[in-house]
Length: 130
Image (cartoon, rainbow, N blue to C red):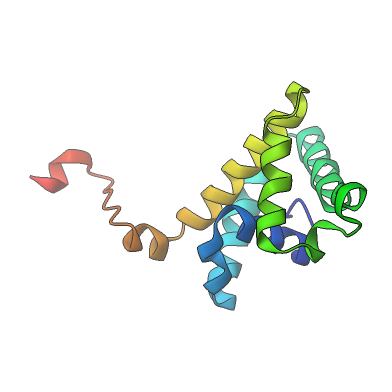
């Protein structure tokens, strides 16, 4: 289960990783599956808190821009997340960093993304490179 509906989730992902806007439906499904699997291993309370936090991100921009997160352009979306990552409340900063970690896990955890950035990890470790 993802921490938001598909439209809000994709808006957050593409704000943090602009290259994700070019993903095809199969790549999005792979990204979503990685995130859902990571969240499934977390306590219910944490998943619930993350879902509430993401819903808050979805509506918070209405106070400043008069529109929800999904209706903002990419620069404003990123600005909202940057403001939140420097919020005075530790819980908000942790929420943004946790969300960012999930997005990066989903995007860069896909084999195609790893290959695109030259990531060549091998289960055999350094022995595989010798």
